[in-house]
Length: 371
Image 1 (cartoon, rainbow, N blue to C red):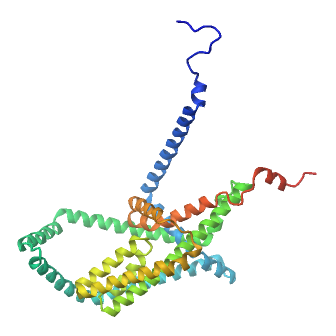
Image 2: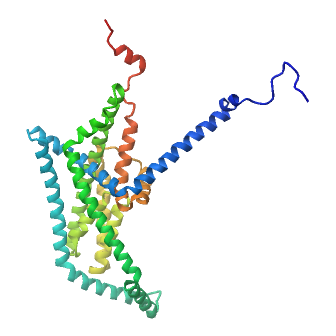
Image 3: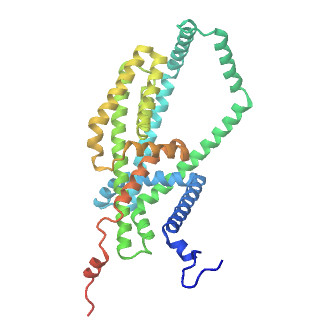
């Protein structure tokens, strides 16, 4: 059957297929798929290069946190290289002193903790065997034998070799982070200015604004979290020392480190402290330790954190949980520590992307007239 003359053809053209509503939706969906694919490729590449990416991120975070010290030393007339060395050596001395104190504390209290742990495990075994839900002693012995067999098996040996390789990677990453931190402290603004050389006008101004915002938010977040972590560690550590819990100083340092992981870090540190108190001092002291941890966390969350973190960017707890999950999957414990500050900086950059950005007519009006 032929189409009568004068009537439009029933077959749609390619142009109409691409310009109607369904075509526009298909094009936009394809663009989204391409962007997501590129994002997946970039994340996969970063994960494969984590031995380099993680030291760079750690050095960047520490450099942003130490930027006020660098500015203060430079205002006093000190050269950049001397201020960098003083800041870097001071940080190394503080961290080295803490590690030395932890080692001596563990060595001095290890025998006491080992004997207390043996007594506590015997009490736990008696409770399990003679408690309300009795367990056959042969089952406990079989579990012990299974642990011994695993410790002496080839799997444990391969696990030890894997642990040795991890230690080597950690040492390499730490050395690389120190070197990168030195250059970030010394030439941080110059490095960012080098990346902004290809840009001009409002694009360059946007890059400068993003750099200043990233340093401000990242440094404020890290410094505020460090203050809160120090208060938590001091409160819980003093409580553990008063109660006579072994390894109070190492546990306080663990509280300080885990406080950089929001929501779950303080809970994990409190559980560890309570377990040590349960094994070494009994259930009553463990209960008191749990109460101390809960009280310190409540005081920190309700009073200290709103004051200290007032100048830093706050994130919704759901965003924090998603960032923690993604960071843990991609980078383990280190990824969990770095995820929240990176998310905070990303959100701050999004908020300041077009702040004070003049429109095209306004830019034309601001331009001087040519003679």
